[in-house]
Every structure is written in C-alpha cells, then in structure tokens.
Length: 227
Image (cartoon, rainbow, N blue to C red):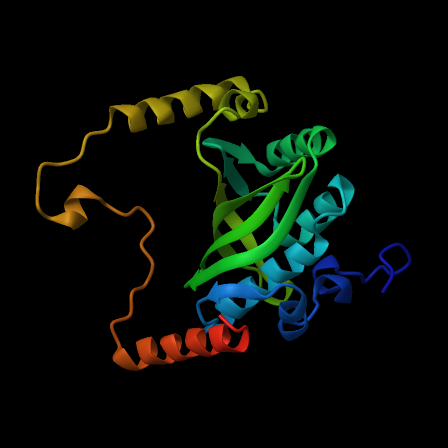
C-alpha cells in the first residue's frame, strides 16, 4: 500500500507496521515474558515487537514509526525529564545524530492491563548494556494501541541536557516536581500500602488457575528456547 497515492491510506494499518506477532518472535524472541492474555495485551505486545522491527534504521525511520506508536498527546519521561511528543522527537533527533544507538535482544516483556515493562539489550557507540522502559497504553480501536505515557532511564548525567528541550514554564514545573520528590519522606508505619503508595496500580490476580497457566506458558517458552 502506498502512502503517497492512496487517499484512504491509514499508516497504522500498513502491513509493514503490522507484522504478525508469531513471525516477529522468530526474529525478536523474548527471553522472559508474561502471557498476553487480553486483547489489549496482545495489541501492546505486537506493537512493541513491530517497534523493534523498525529500529536501528536512523532517526527518519524512527520518527515515521512514531506516528504509529504515539499520538500527539503522548508524553515520555526521559532520564527524569517529562517531554511532550515534539520535545521527545527533537531530543531523539539530536541524540541519534551524535550517538550510534543500536537496540539488541529482548530480555523481558511484562504485560498487565494497559501497562508494559520491557528490558532489552542496547549498545551506545559500540558499548553494550541493558535498559528498561515502562509505558501505559491507550486503545485507539482499529488503529491499535498507542503509548499514552512512558518512562525510560533514570535521572543521571543526561538530565541537564534533556532540560534544554523544555519551555520555560515546563522547566519550572519540572523543577518543582523534582524538588517535591527530593523533599518527600516515608511515613513511619508498618502498613506498606501507606508507606509506599502506588500511583498507578495494576491488577493483581490471586486466582491459582491463572497463575498456573502463566507459569506453564513461561516454562514452555523457556524450554523451547533451551533455557
């Protein structure tokens, strides 16, 4: 399907961005994964695998793929700095011009409700390492799941560099947010729910049947991969 000569073209439905999950897992096997139970889980899993299929091709390819993975209201916190989609794209454009970033193998993919957590291998200018990302997705119907908000990296040496992409009012809000975190103290209580409140809790099932099915799926996957 051609994007340029078809007025009915919908990028999210383009076959090149919708390779079947089973086919992608042959190229990008996930060493440890939770079962994709719900349709939302399956949509997120497929979108992330297609994302790996689109990586390592330079900024232009990444930005184009971003039209599938993100929507204008998406936000991403990178190294502790909360960026709008446009700010995130600008940061990535500069980063990929000065640093050779290559994504490697999937290590983990956790899927719960509309949440995803992944750990994967990554090399920066030839230096190997691993990183993690977290994201909450939003369902866009026949256009699939898109990132609503994501988090990648911790506050480190890149923090000041990321701050440069913010508008003055955003910098002020970011500073206030970090000051609040720094000044935060834990409650003196044995109630762990009160001591460590979770802002975005996910569903935790205590059903033994589901737990057994999940264990079996993960165990079979490990056996298939010779782990």
